[in-house]
Length: 217
Image (cartoon, rainbow, N blue to C red; front, side, top):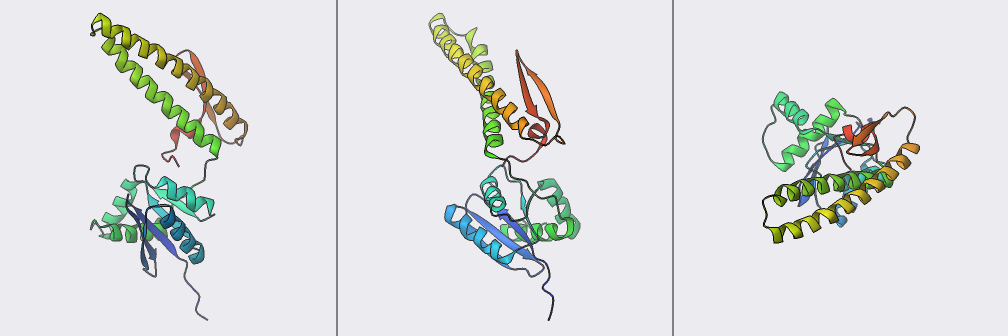
């Protein structure tokens, strides 16, 4: 009886659909990028039992699919676009279509075998969202403070009221972020380092990997 070769999957993610290719058998399939399409793709891959699934980081539109794949205990990795482009160039496969991209990712999975993606827990995801929101508030505060000195007196009153509101929001978000950071750290292995970041007057403890990882699932 012939031995079935291991299957490697590449998925090109766009806003409209998922284009999937396999290697070495070169199966091609396409699924809608919505909840039903995601469920259908995950069901198909669970039946195929691939050795590795590779997606390319695509500005965040791949995150929902990655979460679904990891939740289904499928082996998935997210590759950096420059690494995939270098691989495509080296193999002479630079044609830019979604189907060819999926084929390139499948061959990349087979040849390079990048590290698997781990799924952050809900608390870690919440912390990331809080830290991102805090960064947004700081950017708005900076813009409003720059406008304050140039505005008329009547407009200054309105801008100052907005600044006061943003400062309260900033303080509340920072306090919540700090609490979530401590909870996340309390559940992290001792092998994972953390660092202490002094953010203005507030000491915010953030896991080292939270800032360094290029993925945000």
